Amino acid sequence: MKNDEIRGIVLLPILVLAALTACQGFFPKIATEAFSELAILDRNMMTSDYPRELHVNESFTLYLYVGNHEGRVEYYTILVKLGNSSDFINETTPMNAPMIAVYEKILMENETWIHPVNLSIERAGVNLRLVVEMWIYDDAADDFRYHGRWNQLWLNVTSPKPP
Amino acid sequence: MKIGRMDEKTLMLFILALTILSMIAVRPSGPSKAYGSSVASIENEEARGKIAGAYKAVAEAEEKGGDVSSLLVELNSIIDLVREAESKKDEAKMSEASARLDEVIEKASEIGDQGLAAARWKQNMTVLALGAELSVALIAYIYAPGAFWRIWMKVKGRWRVKAVEER
Image (cartoon, rainbow over the protein chains, first blue to last red):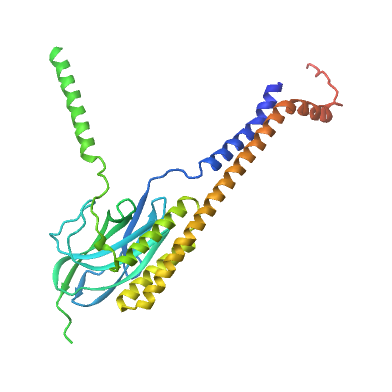
């Protein structure tokens, strides 16, 4: 065995350790894709038993699920709107429909929030859309900005139950 | 095959045009430009402004490396308090929320400074650890072969070399 081979065998683990130390010390945060999560869960916190047929003013429970993976603290506002099948919404345009509830929450990076929501619909209609939109506070604009995340439930709401 | 070569060229151009068109079509759209303070659940403008200010202070403290988890719990509870004060038109609760928001802003600045100090300490420790590791590497480079042969001699120095008899 030559001296250089001995040096190589001994130095390799030390240099690997030094490289790891430098990486962890100077580049602690590895850049990953930033995103936020938004979901509607049913009354059992699942995704299988959503209400479809309701009576006017009949209360029902859903859960909002919000997750922050933006790489920083974020200030969220979640809007619940009631629209029709013809109302437009996409990733850049929020729905122009009446708001029926608003929720605000500030979340840390990698924090999730599950919040119960008790709602009731005050008007009858077929194919109504219960839309949940995510808005985020924009520091630069000093205002909330539509974040392009939205979910919806299709509802048929019939006249109130007879007493 | 002149016509064949022309067809190939046209096909290549067609594929290139299609690729460019599809890239334009699927390029990610920029951030939404839909803004609106009307989306906030809090109508009191002073309280809303103060909450936004506290949020910015907390976000800045977090960027500096501070642990803001306790401040966020407090801030979320203040938002609930402001909403409650607004719905009940309770001035006492509103002023309590305002005082707590001032505290959050004050603490955020302290926590931000602590974060900066911790980051500086961590960087110093990294430099120290790197220095130690590189020193060990240098020492190993100089003395490792000598040490290896000394150990080898200790372990195998008394061994006798014997020729293997040929069969």
